[in-house]
Image (cartoon, rainbow, N blue to C red):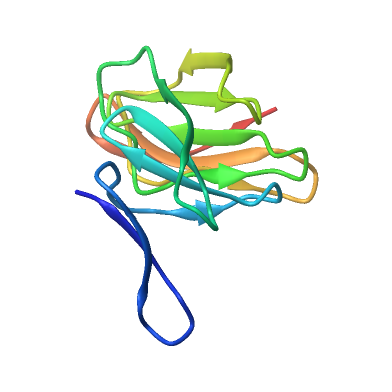
Amino acid sequence: GGTTAFHPDGTVKWTATNGGWGVCLDGLGRALVPQSRTVFAYNKDTGSLLWSTTLPFIGNIVEGLSIDSANRIYMSSTDGFVACLDKNGTLLWNIKVCDTFVTQPSIAASSAIYLSGYSWYRQNFLYRIR
């Protein structure tokens, strides 16, 4: 894995050794990057690592991250957990919902969080949190 940011002309702006898929930008000028069960926050302009948080579940983060208007960061895991970090990377909550998630969280205008996952490894359910 790794993360690379580019200038508009296609030249490399910065590179970081950590990272994988699902890079997203928050409203605070940070590139948020999931890798396995860790979230890395980089300054989007310089590439300097601002913080990293390793989550308490065993599975990996599914797909990518979702960010709400308060810059809270949501993620789901391959072992059925959904978690929320504050803008500083502090874990706010972490709950077991199902056996495994297959999508990253989607945040509705009402602030409800929707995810798709399996329970009993047979059914694909839509879960609503909040």
